[in-house]
Image (tube, rainbow, N blue to C red; front, side, top):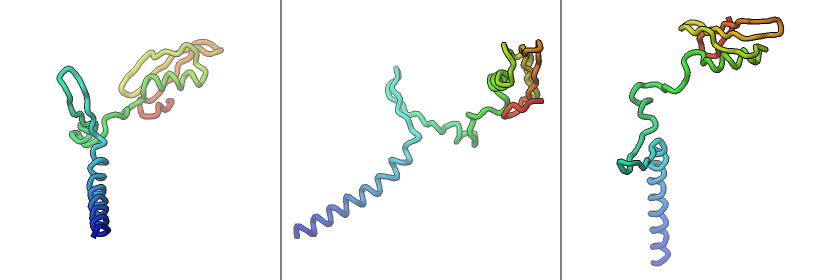
Length: 112
């Protein structure tokens, strides 16, 4: 009788563990925050659910990426001269004198 009771308890513990594990995995997108208003629950994916897409990635050329590319091409004292919706112009100095580089305002900053 004692052996069968042990098997029943082990079986119940295994079933309970299987039902709890998916709920723990589903709650990884929630965050508890302590603040002046007390304890609050924050959903990390709230904006993604609301708008239907991920809003974190850059859509165009990041100006700092354009500066980094210009510096790696040999432009010293590089600075952004002009930005428009279509292009980013970076000016700096080379061994021959002043130089300008123009980048498309697209992801990856291709040089024009």
